[in-house]
Image 1 (cartoon, rainbow, N blue to C red):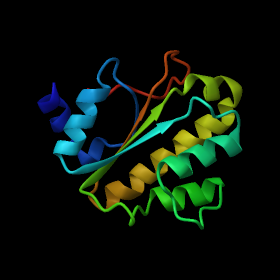
Image 2: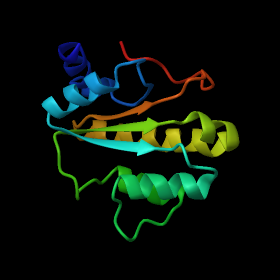
Image 3: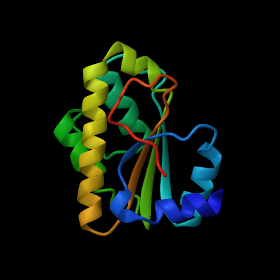
Length: 146
């Protein structure tokens, strides 16, 4: 399965925000690391609102001190990961059901910012993947990788 995921993750043109494939977390991480990607694991299980969401993301991804805890600052940090140079990036947003249920609009906005960051990285020829771990299928526009 790692070879399949390595092939998928190498397609920079397809990088973006996707549902986490069921039971594939370890294989995805192994494929990403094999490809020289930096993997960020962001556990959103304790996020309750926008402030908590941005705080957890910033801390988990080791954003610089100047991170302003707003959407623009989130995009700025995601689109310039100079403190983590790598061949590509993979962010795993874990345990997302709670924040999706409590602050759906903010969670959706967060995913849109991640998608915008993926678009900016794509223009530089670098893959930026984000996988969203949700048990419920509450975000229709998120697709599965194939």
